[in-house]
Length: 228
Image (cartoon, rainbow, N blue to C red; front, side):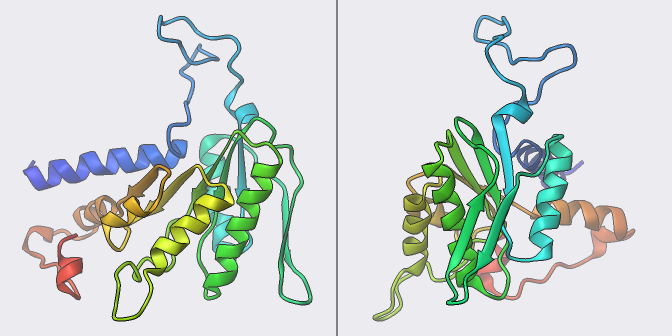
């Protein structure tokens, strides 16, 4: 196995791990109902995963709900109950139907054609969980909107920095995203950001579906994308 293939396989394993546990959510081993402490003794005060974690889906598109359902199935938890709707004047309203007090909340939000509404949904849901005494709020945002506006252009604004500040002020304590336009965008946030990569999955697909993949040529549309 070449060094490139070995690196791709390792990245694939790391990415699958983060997607499955949604960033450091402990999965119990067989015969152990609570995670061991530093001395190797299980802490009986730690609650089961389903009692510590709440997974919500935003209402941006059917694909968002589908992704949230797949994650919930993978983790073995039920999808939380929320109501997201638009008032007649266009305002976004959110009702959190499940208790999140003292729990770790994960909000899945994909981006549809109405980017601004999707952002507002995520912010309102995060703030609603914070005011309902959630222990932490993690946003699962496969694509970070406005990430291409991460540099100053003439008299323009660095909009991505504004979005990062908005998400943090809304109450997010962690963000999981994929393939940021520039990896330096992680520095715009004052919270931990997991920037997962899709390239290991593309590498796996090419190896499995293209018999003569070693003679294939991968073309990038721009010099920036060629680095990936």
